[in-house]
Image (cartoon, rainbow, N blue to C red; front, top):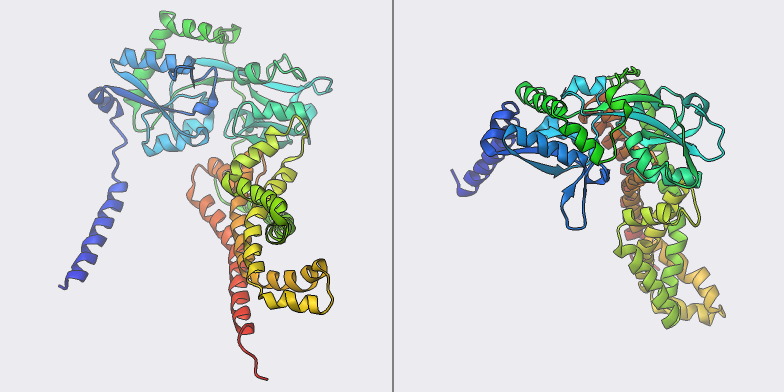
Length: 490
């Protein structure tokens, strides 16, 4: 066999072996492995913050769930180790085998009980409804048709799905209450642990006294590890018996009458597990939002880019420097950071809606990129065009408007089309400010369907459906311009 052919076969064999090994991960026997390694690894999200877990001024991990997991690990004869993951992915990563258990305000729900094992409860929480001071709402039923904020994949989210309200999904604990204070949402429904620390103490917010519902926090364990569940349950039972769990909760200011009262579980309607017409309709709506956002943002980016390019090329030292500062600022910082600053940072001074903030941020950001495209096109116009315009008696402004800029835009059309395709994909970032576009709908559907493959393929197909025609348009423009630039017979 030739040497090149042998190397190809060997490479394919290595890749096939690696892929085959990906499906052979042993997910059972975690308790034995924990005792062998001397470490119990638990997944959590540091963004959860106080009182769950956070880093103190010395960089030490603290929080009531840190103390609970340390106590459980100690009773198992091992040490505990926290691994940071995004909260909405914790259950999926647990099932994959990325950590031993999950402990991070994980609520016991029937849907989760179908996917993983749930330990005995270690905390009883209440769903608390927060409204603006002076608002007339007194229950969840009063908010029908209103915009209510919560976190994704929570029991509160399940309750809101059955309440016929417009749901605004957030990733952090503080942001929903900030938007409630600014009037961007009408109410917030979240656990009392979160509400007491991030919402009820705000000057413009009132938390209604009655519990909308109650639930429990549990530790999540893989289905393949019943022995680990039994060991953790025994450790929690011992902590309850000797009072250690109560001491931990009292230290965190979480011990209340609910901890000694029975919990009546409210059954919410389970979402359909098939990818049928309702899911297709939601993906279609999200695709429409993605396209409208992208078009509106690009319509803003184009004139900004043209003005910046003209300023850099023809504006003189001061104007040119100012334009360059703008371009470097928006190109040199992440668009995600810009979204946070414009939506959350400027909110106390001038509150704008999430759609407006998304269009404005993407437009300002892509305006900087378009400026460099147009600047290159302006510099590509032969000097003789400007001289001919002056010979015809046109002023500098008229020369730009009627001669230079139209030719520059013609040259810039292909890269402009490519930039629009990029903008279409970057619009996925606006989900952090509660806009439900294609990527956010994918994560919501993945949680409802308890799987990522079908929603992921649907999301990819719709992105391709939106972007491929634009890419083809760019290629056609490039071919057309290449033909137009050939010499013409006299």
